[in-house]
Image (tube, rainbow, N blue to C red; front, side, top):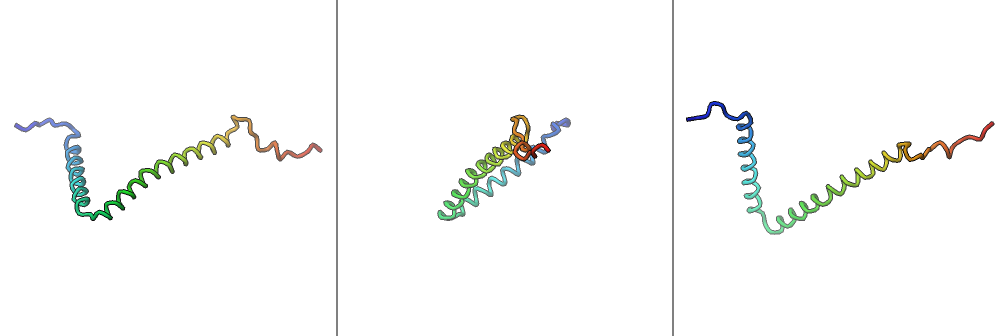
Length: 88
């Protein structure tokens, strides 16, 4: 007997899972059809992507935080102190 009251997200999860399995099968078939030099090139490219992307994002966040900290007045750095005019 079929359940009338199925879970609300069950059908979307099933379709997601079927799509994921299909993509995995396509990826395995593509890896099986590749020559050894192409497989090596893909592995090197993936390794560079996995290595460089987090480094770039981390450096961006560090420089963003440094810029944000230098623009705040909490450290007492005032840009106007060096360019003050003498009293008249």
